[in-house]
Length: 147
Length: 77
Image (cartoon, rainbow over all chains, first blue to last red; front, side, top):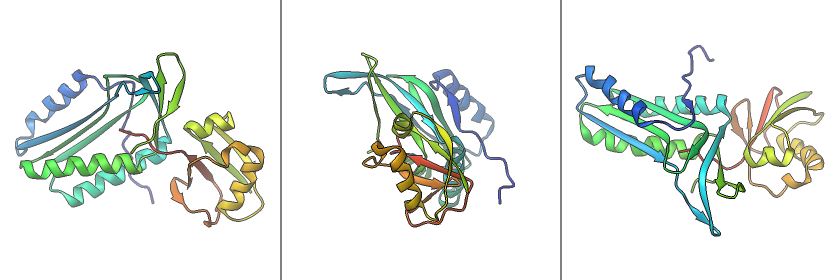
């Protein structure tokens, strides 16, 4: 049964420092929080067979991906005593050096958020149907696979 | 029955489309894939998982209609 609205995690294009900064600022009113932990995934300019990755073009099975993000969120709240958490993932083109994943976990105390962030990021990498086309400088491409 | 099939990433490159409807008269996922391999022989040696109604399923799962998706390796994050 799906009686609740599933949040859309995806944002078109790179996640900007301004967006991340604003997210931090929004939490200043939540004064039970004593520790934030943030994970930022950045597109790497990998060199593969002498060709450099200049961008990754992300696509996703969006409905299933948002369901998975929601399941990860629920599992995380069950496992860790978090005050709040947020996940944003890019779709479309993100250039090398830009941010494609922003995970933000907050709790009264630090030890929990260290563990929670690792758990969330590993779950995303393993279970969310997002696909990445690595674009090289000569416009050729290959498909990225999470290791 | 009519199956709505969705393709992603490398798989969509091989099929040259992101979705289509396919008439299927047998019962499980592996029989459905056999049908697809006839249409797209280059799919056969590719690495992908199958999701039915947005949940991953194994090859012996029965097809219950609605939506199937062929998902290449994940690359999120």
